[in-house]
Image 1 (spheres, rainbow, N blue to C red):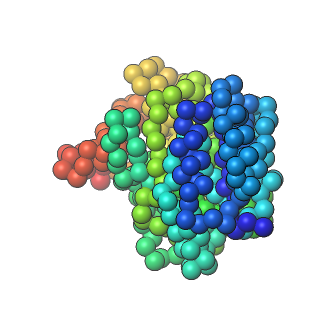
Image 2: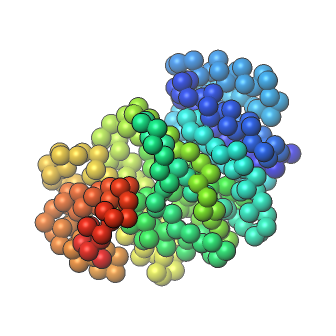
Image 3: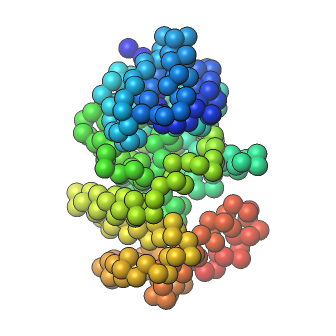
Length: 337
């Protein structure tokens, strides 16, 4: 039995597959199995996967009709035998020592899960360390406490991608948590929130060990607007249900997180956001049930009263300021505190 099971769902990423797989197979830590699921690709992905599976006995290849990434990951979990589970995207890249550092950190600190930071790699070649990373350093805390604290500190930026996490397999089995197969985007948020509720000890590695490569035609960028809105609503409902079983302040934080998830999904409409009257009315009415003054600033609540789309624009400016650097943060900071 391998120490780590690496699960990769593949759909039409033939132009980037070799980079991803080469970075995985070159890891300094070698005790892992690779579960590749071709999710009905219509390009050359399958032929590339077959070549790799023939030259490395650690690879198991499964060819299926298209069911979506959530169903593929659930299928991969059913085939995994490793002590730890790691989900990798098929178009990104791992640093050479990533798996080694994650396994060592989990075992040294007796963790249920560990999270790493990442690099954003842009089309122009620019590399930027992810600025939204809640660092535990040597502090270990329960998973739901980490999830809620992280959500507030990163200004609800929704960074809970599964490829940031290595998780103890027995925790996943005991929790019964699976990816929501009806959801096409934001499935990571639903999965990690549910899973972290069952983790007693989580920790973080500050180093950016994963390279998140920004491609223009990524899955998130090509999804239809209505699908994204529907998925945001479904995941938000999932978080609200999860909050029923949590103690305070985590229960309220989850409900605010669920509300903010729907607010931020307005970004997909860009300039059309002001025309989404039913959506915006629902956001405002839900906000009345939440103690938002404990979670967002006076100025942000004021912008919400003007129009939810204005609040979204403000949050986008804060995010953009973080990307530009510290000297630009001061311009916007006063309106977020």
